[in-house]
Length: 295
Image (cartoon, rainbow, N blue to C red; front, side, top):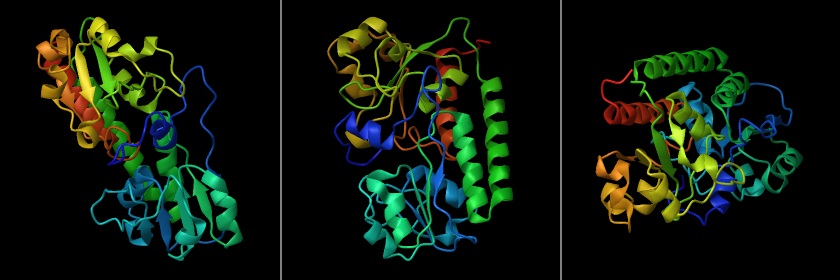
């Protein structure tokens, strides 16, 4: 998530709008304007895309990334905005390919008029969509074999991780916190799908949600009594186990009583790039701690 948290749910709709994997229309297909040749000057306006470009060996072709692309450390971070992109500001970097997560403000058309190819890769709502975007970026940048190796490696490691994680006799319930005002992510999101791999039960699934991100209440969460709490607002909002325990009534929640409040890296828990394995590892460790020895 972004460093200075924007007002929710607006930020969820802009940076973290993941189309549900069940009961909803499929995510929009990638959109691309045409231009021949392998790009040598790439601008990335999406943190997940930036991470993927560097992971597949295309980092040397990246000349600028948006203001939220903070990984890897050597990515050429600029003041460019992926939320409110300016075609003129982007063009100043003389790119031959611009990758964005949305065609905000007619960006594709504006760049096309300037002779710049644009590729729109919408926020992934499933693991398969995430893998597909990695593959697409490999093909678009001349690194198809590297992208294929990356995807295969992630799939294999994720399969092994899930297999090695204890399987509780009954599903452990969990709450994934996006903000201090109790916005969460249900199972019909990319985040929810990762938790689902480990057989966890999402307490946000019973709440109505637009785009998969319901706002819960403190009272409903205390009543739901999740066995695990995952905080994806540690960097933006300085939340931790102590802060959660200090909330009125929350000391009685099982996750709090048993020390199963997990501090996540906000960015890793919201990006569908190669670091999704780090997110999955954090979930696996939490499940193992909460259900030691269970199979």
